[in-house]
Length: 388
Image 1 (cartoon, rainbow, N blue to C red):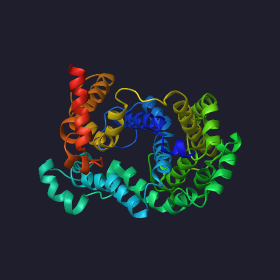
Image 2 (image 1 turned 135 degrees about the vertical axis):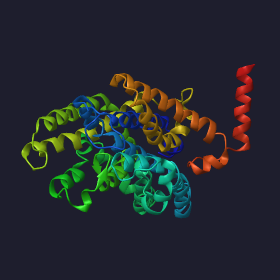
Image 3 (image 1 turned 45 degrees about the vertical axis):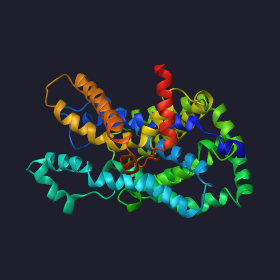
Image 4 (image 1 turned 45 degrees about the horizontal axis):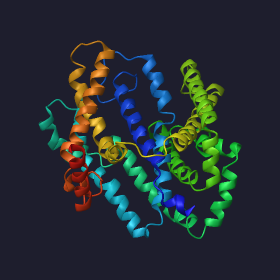
């Protein structure tokens, strides 16, 4: 286990990059589904609504599971003080920077389109800072809850990697049983069924209550904590993907056909079963496929993996800014969406490359490690070699 613990998990890097791209495409579709948003197209599409329900079944749970897996490899590199410092630098500072800067544009767009403010953006800023600033970061809520939940779980996770190694080893055998592995989302399911929708416990984002992500973060840690469970996930990769996708598709069909979505019924309970367990089994499929096929570094992976956090921080603000203009052009909606995606991606990457990646001050503000003289020298050496 020790050798594997210190080995770079390229499969997790791939999952992190692909997961952020999924988040990006998910938000690009929000212009065209029925749910309210900062800016909306004047026509919504049932097919997009189905896509939103489908992808949200596993999208943010996947991101928390990846983060939980990363915690397994991060723990043991220092004490609690270093752990907190790392999380503050990686998560809280970018969250604060976002809340104090570009998230004001998202807030302005929401208030403007919902009749809460009538002036221009610069007239809105004095209103935003004392009254509307979102300290939990709007779409950056993931950073806040990842920080909070990491601190909550730290004593347990630290114990399991220290004095609790024997317990973790026994747990590895239990988790490697297919029936156990596939039913690990039972606590969140019971939460959906037992707790009323108006309960504070059901407050959430990304399709799930916040409290469910605490459990999923722990599961992400556990499913990479032992060799047997990891091997089981790898062996079941195609089964998990097939079963998980079938269940999530079943949820989409059943939920769409259920007329009354506000009253608890057998149909709704079955839909929750399909969504919660299907989404989790999809995640197991993704982890298994990555463990089988994405274990080697590829050109551009390090660059993409380093860009993940700044990309996430920028993506929704840029999408909304680009969408604001493109939606006024009167183009066919499919063409509108394609332009929004391509232009937004290009703008995000340009901002990252030209305004963030090259400058240590900006890297600090966006939760990145500083460039060292060694890394700069290596980059120059690689560039010279390629030129030669």
